[in-house]
Amino acid sequence: MAPDFWFSPLALALLGLCVGSFLNVVAYRLPKVLERQWWLDVAQSQLGDAEAWQRVSGHKGSLPAAFGQSAKTIADTLEALPPLSLSRPRSRCPHCGHVLRWHENLPLLGWLRLKGRCSACGAAISGRYPLVELATGVLFAACGWKFGAQAQTLLWCAAIALMVAMALIDLDTTYLPDDLTLPLIGLGLLGAGLGWTGTRLEDAAWGAFAGYGALWLLAFSYKKIRGVDGMGEGDFKLLAGLGALLGWQLLPSIVLLASAVGAAVGIGLIAFGGHKREVPIPFGPYLVGGGIAAIFFGQPLTRLWFPTL
Ligand SMILES: [Zn+2]
Image (cartoon, rainbow, N blue to C red; front, side, top):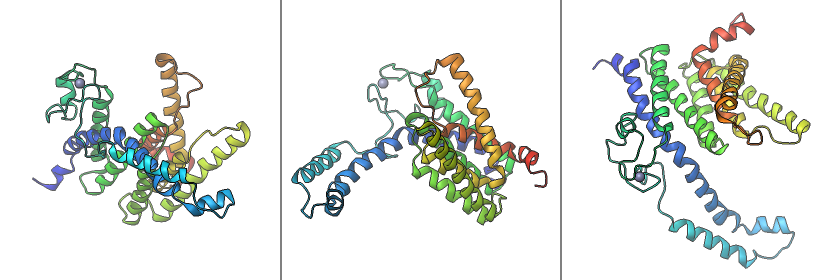
């Protein structure tokens, strides 16, 4: 088939459904894989670091024996757990352990055919899975429509895939892993360097710098005034990635759009969800919402503050 077909909105929509299915797996497993890795790091490096212990304690002696024993117990316990990675084990029902058959695992269709229930135990399967698949499919198709049938369009799809994964993980854990935010910065700089995103390299570099700096400054001031952390470093890196992708000129639009998305969701939560005030609301999903909106509608909005662009 002609290359035009492979980058058409229809083909990208199908690709997006499959990628969305993978993003569900990433959102479910990456935080667990990382947490396991942190435990191992504590066991293998921190608890075995005699020099760090000497710096902390001020003693010249060796590590307390209890440290070594704890390290060994932690490492052994972790290694006894069943292996976990993005590809292993196969997807299964969290309630009964039923391993999903290939047709139950089909993006969107699998869930619809099962009517949202596990075929073995009948437990409800979250509607978030098909929703993420559908949203990714729609966003990929929108990239095809907006950027045309060319290879560059895949870079925008990749950026959106990273952002969707970040939004889901931030929503679940209020944590934005470097494994996702740093590649977004890299993708933005690479896309600008190759001339694929239409962002000049210097605008991308300033975008990354200003995106990180603006939120850092905001969080720093908030902490000085209120005495609590309002935002995490992951948010700074996410806005740095969006700045690298879209250029510094779009940062005000992104933050404005993120605030609009935040306000809309906030009103929705109050109206339907009864959100408790003390529970921190992660900022990442709003930045992702603002960033995705800016990819598609940012330029006309940006001309409002920078009419010469
Ligand atoms: Zn089940």
